[in-house]
Every structure is written in structure tokens, then in C-alpha cells.
Amino acid sequence: MENLNEEVHKAFEIIKEGGIILYPTDTVWGIGCDATNPEAIAKIYKLKQREETKSMIVLVNGERMIYNVFKEIPEVAWQIIDLSEKPTTLILDQPRNVAKNIIATDDTLAVRLVKEPFCYKLLERMKKPLVSTSANISGATTPKSFKEISPEIIKGVDYVVNLHREKICQNPSTIIKLTNDSQVKIIRK
Image 1 (cartoon, rainbow, N blue to C red):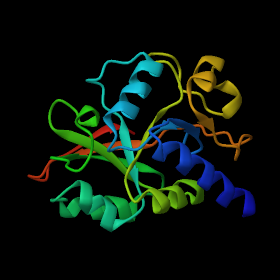
Image 2 (image 1 turned 90 degrees about the vertical axis):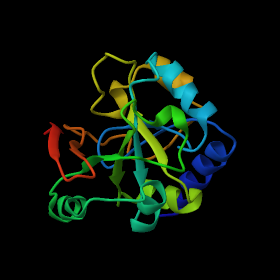
Image 3 (image 1 turned 180 degrees about the horizontal axis):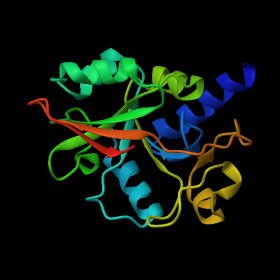
Image 4 (image 1 turned 45 degrees about the vertical axis):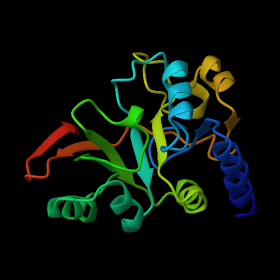
């Protein structure tokens, strides 16, 4: 527990200064930063060698934060969140209060509600959404554990969180796209 709070504190200090971190999520390891900071987000795109039109996910830790990012949330979103057995990312329409360069060209943003203790506590400190994108160069395979992450990525971030380095995760999250007019489309099972 002690270690958890210490790691949250260290990660928060880096993020607050516009840095990027490598951290454990409720699924695979992620690269993250403050979702409201366009310069920090640009650093992640550069590290991943990814075009800025390929959007990333943001993590939130509760209803209040999700409503801060989306004014309208389709009713079905809450049903999916409640019924999901595994981590589920929702793509929703018309995000706000986040950096422009994280929003997809069709004015949507992928968001996931997390309960994983490290992410949850970090979000509590930040009071802002946290960017999450897989810890690999764009196009390379998503690492399933910390030891599969390339040295290039590890060297390219400002801080590597020292928790759950042994954890192996087989799958990234399910991704479901929901439009404000209630259309539902599964992007990744």
C-alpha cells in the first residue's frame, strides 16, 4: 500500500510538469500523460511514431470525470459499463475539456472507466483524465507484460512506475463505439 501511494505521488509530479509515464493499467501497460496537455500528448505520438490522427484512449475514474469530458452520454453506455465482465473502452461523441490533439477526426474520444488502484488513485490526484495508449511503437505488437516493452519506449518516457512488473495481460480492452443517436458498434472484442 505504502509503495502504491509513493508511486502515485511520483507519477503525479511528472504528469503535472507535462511529462509522460509508463504505467500498469487494468489491461496492458500504457504510456500516459495529462489528457488536457497538448504538448505532453504530442510527446507520446512522437515516441510511438504515430500520426496524430490515430487517437488514444483516456482513462477516467468515475461519473463526475466522465461527464466533465462528455456532456451527453447515451443511456446504453451505463448499461455496457455495468454489464461488462472485462475492461471496456467506449468511443463517445463530442468530447470537451481535453486537448484537441487527442480527439479523433470524427469528433469522438475513447474513454474507459478504471477501478485499478494505481490508475484510480492517480486520477484522483490529477482530477483530469489520463491518456492511455499501448506501450509500443505504432504498428509493433502490443506488449503483454513489462518485460516485453522495448528499451526504446522505456528510455523515451519520463518515469516508469515501479509496480506490477510481473503482471501478464493477455488482452487489451474491448472497444465499443456509441453514437449520441444510440448506434452501437463493436470495434474490438
